[in-house]
Length: 367
Image (cartoon, rainbow, N blue to C red; front, side):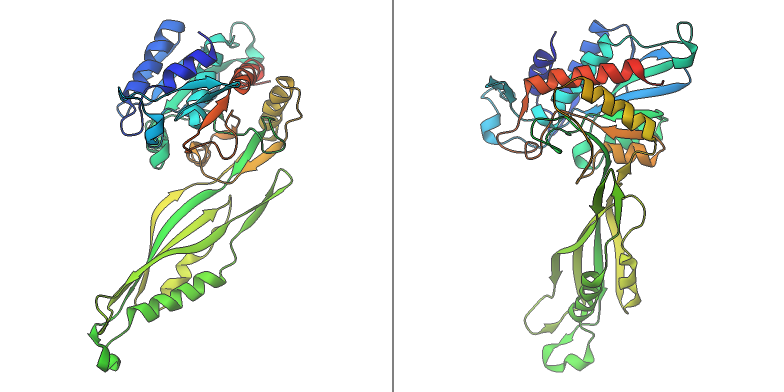
């Protein structure tokens, strides 16, 4: 089965609310097509292992997707997948069932060095497709909690078209996202006697002023400036036109970078103000230059374009793996602007390219 066929089959299976059926397809395919040890954990992650050695290299993806547009669903409830002009169109083709299929094919076809054959390059190769990436990394976090700890990982999120159109690059860092809520509390009073109360909206406004003055951290990675950001995105408070409000909430979206965080806790210096973190998707930075260069060499050897080490603007499961101690890079078929769209698509040539890249890495690392 080709990577295009496997992508098509996998992309047809609905997996925005429940990824079980897509996981079933992957598990059955791996059991049929490989002699690897295949497991399925209690949340639905699909893992396969082969080879033996002190170091572990994982090819990582996820088979859940965001909700499709009506135009992407057929009358029978399956997702529609169409091939035209060298691309596969359909929900999940880019994010990221195409890369999952490429990783599965590469896992099947790679000849992994073992202790008996080459002690200097003994390694275990792992295929892992997680659930719940689109809702905060549920599957990756569960796997890590259960002991999933590869030394190295190639995460197949999109890295094509960053340095130049059509070129599949290697991302060595990405931003994270911290979503938080500032809650200001006061004392309710009649608006005609405002001095009898404590205006929660005023306290929230003072907190917003602090947020506006924060200088988000930034780091230099792969010749790029990866800059964080902090922005107020929602505010809610008050109950009536003639009542001094006793509560006001402010939502903050923060894009984080490896290293320091913006000191949002400073808002708690204001009387009556609390700050709580609602979501914290970690950033990622590859800590092993040799591994990143190996993947870059593999990418260079699989295409005519000249790939580069780049950074990505948004969080992936690589953040959770990196936080747990895995050296990660991101290398995948999807291009910027394809994921989550009503016209989502992926290049079939680039899918084939990703198979070649993943195989080259699996068969050359560790050195």
